[in-house]
Amino acid sequence: MLVPNSQDGVPDVTTPPIKPGETRVFEFPLRQAGTYWYHSHTDLQEQSGVYGSIVIEPKNGERVKTARDHVIVLSDWTRENPHEVMRSLMRGSDWYAFKKGAMQSVLGAAKAGSLADFWDRERSRMPAMDVSDVAYDAFLANGQRSIDLGGKPGERIRLRFINAGAATYFYLQSATGPTTLVASDGKDVKPFQIKRLLIGMAETYDVVVRVPQSGRWEIRATSQDGTGHASMWIGSGMSHPAPEVPKPELYNMDAHLMAAMDEEEATGNEERPLSPYRRMRAVESTAFDASLPRRTIELRLSGDMTRYVWSFNGKTMAEDGVIKIKRGEVLRLELINDSMMHHPLHLHGHFFRVVEGQGNEAPLKHTVDVPPMGKRTIEFEADEQGDWLFHCHLLYHMHSGMARVFSYEEQGADHRPNLGEHARDPFFFMADGSVQNHMSMGMLTLMNAHNDFYGSWDVGIHHHDEDGHDHEFDYEADVAWRRVINPDLATLLGWRFTNREDEKDRAFGGIEYRLPYLVHSTLQIDSEGDVRVGLEKSLQLTDRISWFAGLQYDSGSLWEWTTGAEYLLSKRFSLVTQYHSEHGFGAGLGFRF
Image (cartoon, rainbow, N blue to C red; front, top):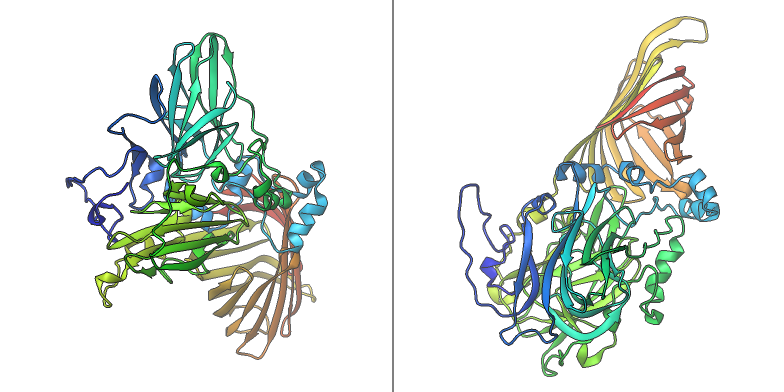
């Protein structure tokens, strides 16, 4: 909503956080009408349910008349603590993909007839793709899986949809047939019919439906990843469910890429359509005064899905958080998505024009979806003052770096915005490893966006040398710092402790590089003059079973290799069996925390 800068509610950037037990009164003039909403911008509270709707009725009534209206707040719900969700995403866990049946595997690709696509993805060094990051336990409408809205036969009803999901796009579709879209983000548009509507996080859409003469009809909000839905029912009598939305083709990247490339030819009848911006027309001219100065800013939407770091132009909010703007200029933002994820981008304090060839009738919005490998152009007039947040409204993307502050230069050359919690780069603790009857391997990691401080171990519980002598408990342990340069390259610096025969403790440095087919390579040089080269590869065979292997050559200790398999039991535990050239064959329990 358009509010005074000091009341915008972004912690520290504009508004001090409301501490426990405090009361804060917000009072401001209403400068707009329509469907809006509010939510906490503190920490991850939005995921926990700190949100609600705001509807402002026009002074002279709605442009499109209906018998009545209903506000429908869509949301996603997880039983996990949102901080655990964030930690799971940062550690690159496949658990959410498994939980919702989206795990990519060799067997799954074979069943789908997509083995070539599977290996093409691996060859291009791309992690397994999904359209949604989190496996949710429920999708809700006004806090319920299903709600009844009633309605008399023949009535026209306005449904005010608000997507308050933390990380879920929804497809909206009515069993009654196409609905009439009349407003978006609170702004009226010229009415048009739409079969299936994609709504991104933070977006609002007003649609009009007519209650049929008989029967109970479903309007369904289906999660974009196809794992669930929320239902709204109108009318009474025999139930008529809405059509199913086809699930995404996870193995076929081209299907996702072509959706953005073919958007100009889209008819609105696609099974999995993109946002309907090209069909939207403002009810009056939204063109800016031609005399205003204009400036174009390119923002590339980038990310590292494995480490879950999201950014603009390759830099997070913590690394480059401020874009200076001048009051009275028109800013044109070229938003180019270099990732395979949708990003709903939201600008505080301003409406912007979504420029999709509509000329003076370009619709005004406050949030725009940028599809995978797609592009959007938006423009807004800098007619405010102060500092205003611009961010991805996928909650976990924003909290991992995809945000900026537009700061008005009129505040002075010495003004430095307080970026608050949105510019933090928090550390997360991870533990991965296995305990088997013949050995134990693992790693403890303290990680943030670009750094891992870790301790790793490789312990042989029972070992026979070439002369038949029995050795108990030989070990090699590293304490090191990994600096991640980009998703494919990292540097290493650390110290190695060992009690292995003819070896001693030493310092080491090196690099890690991700090769085609997602093979991880390592090159290290240590303080004793030895060189170590390693290759590692893992492969998901089925939803639960994965294979792994590693090969290492050290100029001091020579060759070492291992291979094994893992059977997924739960988010925390797996069964592991492994052969190691130094420790032999065994089995045990794998763990992840």
